[in-house]
Image (cartoon, rainbow, N blue to C red; front, side, top):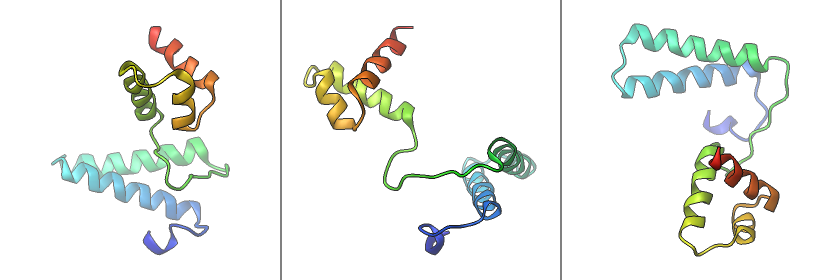
Amino acid sequence: MGSKSRTNIKGDEVLTYIADKVTEVLNQRAVPKSVVAAAALAVSDGISETFGGQLIYFRIGHSNSSEERRLSIISDFETGNYSRGELASKYGISLQQVYRIFKSRLK
């Protein structure tokens, strides 16, 4: 997908790429071939059913994992080196979002 990564591509190309990545990851984990094929198809079909007809934008250079960011924020806060305001600035989110992260952690 290299040369097309910064241009507009069609949905079926994205779904094919996703299926290929699922296949690659599962093969690296020695998952049986029959399971790999079924999983790749199920993932791409599920994405198509869920997001079909929608315009989706992926930001460049940002982590896809909000959970990873959430854990990093909590970890940074627990070091005692950052205030909530500093964490909001560091991670490019609002102070209210930082408070929501800590509130959800308590549940």
